[in-house]
Length: 308
Image (cartoon, rainbow, N blue to C red; front, side, top):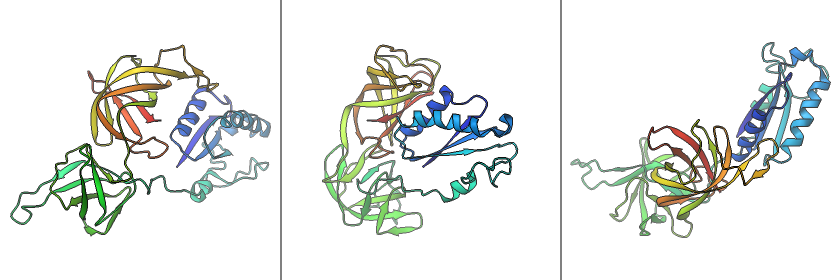
């Protein structure tokens, strides 16, 4: 919910600064704290602080961030980190610690759209629990209550919640981000990667999707390349069908010509998976709207994506 952007007062706003700020915006982080550090190395000069602040503000207007807060600090000497600096009487704002302790943090969970990716099927097969069949996982969105009518994906079958179990006992309701075991009234076939949702409120189901990808690996992203994709508790293979554009991190211009997506680049791509995924846009649900890309040969994580 809060991202700290560190800027060296000697060097000012760099490409890396813009990249980190854009990624924070892409992740829908509502609060940015821009710490202009090493003020001691520029003699605590107010003009230098204002110059950097103005340059970053001009860039931040293009971002989807509601709150940007600036603090001049010296991490080495502790200026404006915990206590107010005596070296910068011209700064009338708060210290970094005070801001972090008092910033308003709203919930980043979606309590409207019910999403429960099944992680594990619990079948004890003991004398005490010979008929027990529960579906364990973490609630990714919404509120599930005992007696709720639900739909199972991908089958489309419906049932009702008979019971919600946890390690500490039974619950009447479960909400994000609780880890629970859901028992249904009917004996239906569910496995890891399936999803329990509300009958009248289900996610997108499909194999084609648009993704904003942040690339991590030295080996560039390959057009028509095949990768393993991990989404909630599902795993599938996917192919990069099209590179829509590469983002120029300095101007935020969409470059539709350059198809070379290397380490630290950000791009919008179209992918197709080998089986349907149950997903929402990242803006709607951070859990069901995010994916990671894994190299099939090395099992290295090579990219992270936000579904559009």
